[in-house]
Amino acid sequence: MATEKSQESSGELARLREQVNKYAILLDIVRVMNAETNLDRLLELIMQEATRVVEAERSTLFLLDQERGELWSKVAQGLERQTIRLKVGSGIAGYVAEKRESVNIPDAYQDPRFNRETDEKTGYRTRTILCMPVHHKGGGIIGVLQVLNKKGGTFTKEDEGLLAILCSQAAIALENAQLYERLRAAYQELKELDQMKTDFLANISHELRTPLAPIIGYVDLLLSEHPGPLTARQQSGLEIISESVRRLRGLIEQLLTFVQLGQGGGYLQLKEASIDSLLRAKVEAFQEKARAKELSLTLAAPASLPNVIADPEGIAQVLDLLLDNAVKFTPYGGRICLAAGVVTGRPFQASPKEGRQPFATGVEDVELVEISVSDTGIGIPEDQLEKIFQHFYQVDSSSTRQYGGTGLGLALAKKIVEGHGSRIQVESRVGQGSTFRFFLRTVSPPSASDA
Image (cartoon, rainbow, N blue to C red):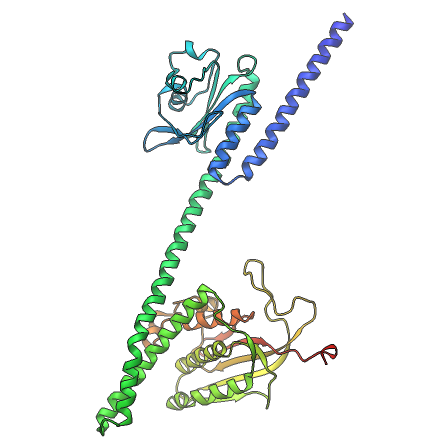
């Protein structure tokens, strides 16, 4: 008697261990499924593991096509790769999808719902079937999971429990994978649209720039009076044309630069450059515009500044954009100051999301030249300070009508400055003016070991 009880206990313990092992395997399966975002690989994984966990010969995971009223599967585990399509209501899987209930069939050929057509095509002999609906969180049907031919008998209640758990977890993984697929498709479409926009801007900018060259050339020729003398009225008209065409060319150049920076490819050529001469040249170049509005334009910088690592043309463009904005948005009689000075620090510490590197990767600060453009203009509302660097953004649509511009200048300046590993900063108060500043790394002096 004691021996029989001992044997029963041992048998029960063995069954418990086997059950625990199966649930441990199921837990591992669930973890792997939830980590898989590729829909095709997930379908294969679910079928493969369903076959293994209930010790079946084959399995098929059908997904529901609501619009066509069909179940479809790209692969059937144990068969060659193929697409299978069934009408909802047809066969065992179609019955489960329609009735939304599980079936456990010990002898397929004795069940009137079983469709023998697939067996006839493949030569496979179906015996036992366990088929369950896969529900999404809203309660509807995503698909149907079907396992065939239990090894060594019929599918048990324990098999039903295991497959039910697998189906519930598979539903979550499938919804995640389908969502990921939709997001990836949407992202790819956005990328293609963005590329189309970029190509369009590049092409239209080039086409617009091409006819401007001869127009500017002929206007300059006429203004030189080589073809013949001009009346005062003609002179005035040609000067207006010249100014407008050059402004148009500047806008087109901005657009082209913006596109080129967006495409990458080493548009900026960083090298040792003299910032001192560049600043003085820009103040001189903008004096005429400033005088036209009775603005005071000054340079506040030491007698000499150290050379910097920069793309001279890129930084010249940034200064043009900032000074042009300052002149544009500063009322008559106001003040503009272009300032520069040597500071130490790390002005730009990139985050992993931004993907850019700080000036110095070590713990010590580096020597920098701080450049700023300040004005006593109309200022920018505090809630708009971050938005002004978005391309084509205008603080107020009325400002476009009053002051002109495309809203591209600050976005372009931001891209160029960030291309130097820095960040453009702004401080502003409505009615009191604005200050834009950025930093450039100086050329490191040779070390003792280099001498």
